[in-house]
Length: 167
Image 1 (tube, helix red, strand yellow):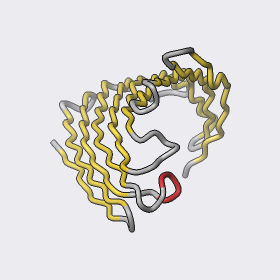
Image 2 (cartoon, rainbow, N blue to C red):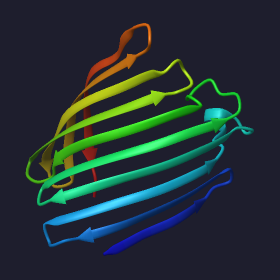
Image 3 (cartoon, rainbow, N blue to C red):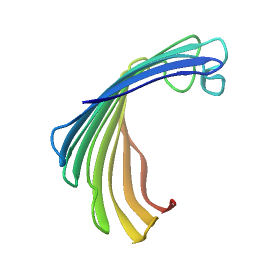
């Protein structure tokens, strides 16, 4: 078992993250992480509001296949318009990580507790295509819906194309 732990101290924000990693054999691994953040982000909610976040995530790998999930709980004390003061976010996904074509599927949801129980979700299938070593493009479809107590609204249906280069 390996451990990753760090503490980040910014001017107005503090964060801690702990992540054990288990390598069961050379093809199978599990990483589980817990994190905590507290402070203010001026551009989001002003200097006098305090944001608190607790999160947990896990990644499970078997060979070239990976599954991942995350849950994050956020509260903000003070007068805030956006983002919501009280929200829970969740993400689950899977992807293939080998070869020229690497498909993936993500599902994420936000439950906004202070806004009449509004809920938003995104379904995001996509594929990464490797063109050359270190150069690929990502092609994905985003379907984003908002579900309020009175009606459901589609916020986005878009095809996205990203060129990705790393060295």
